[in-house]
Image (cartoon, rainbow, N blue to C red; front, side, top):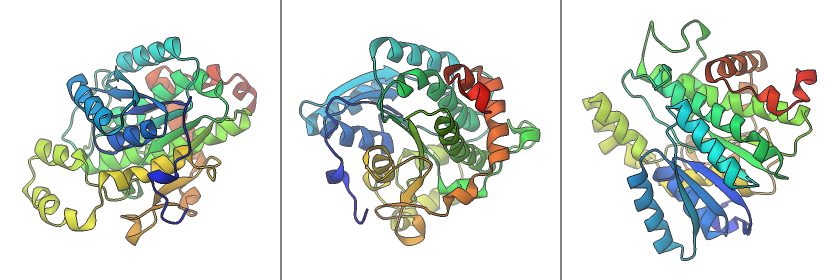
Length: 317
């Protein structure tokens, strides 16, 4: 895995990938790299105007890129259901699902379904999308689900007594909770896929400290001078490019040394920068009881029941 780059991605011709948040940052670089190696990439974007510009940019740098722009608002279960239905109708296979899109440390907002915005977008929207696309995924041999978490997960905890943070809201605490939910979901999904005998695997990744539009959006919406100063002066010295930040999820999605249940992140200084590396200590973060409870709550909130899609799991769980 030493110094693994996009040049190490295998030929992906004939593969179909879906990337959420494909119009910018990690999603844009992931889409570009996948397309450059022959994959047909479904670019899921909330803002279609930005999506069209990203699509045009990629086609300039990757002649012949096979791209398909679709609308997806993860803060709307109706939008998630519409996209999943459309993809399922128009594609008979789905090799790669990158649960990449996210928002970070924003002031209090609610999704269209009444969820706290960060939990609703970062976790519940992706939980629903993955479950609805699971029939296509499990029908595609060797398919993978790659879910992006964050280093902020280490400071997050799942507060089941106030999951939507309606009684006490801190924007960074809420972000940490949503990122903790991402890694618990990825590991729990692998456990259930294995038990059901599916060849689909689930992998978690994090980009370390990567410069994307997440920081700018957080600062703009929160109007905080301290964070604005930090991101303008210190962050460029600590962080890496969006392309480097995308390498862990590209490695997780395409390398032959991934078997499911791993966390891949930068292997350099403080896991903030560098080439992708499997974090061998990450399984210690998998609290099965918390993950299973979060799974049940997520099913109740979204109305997406994985047990119905994996019939054997009714016996196994």
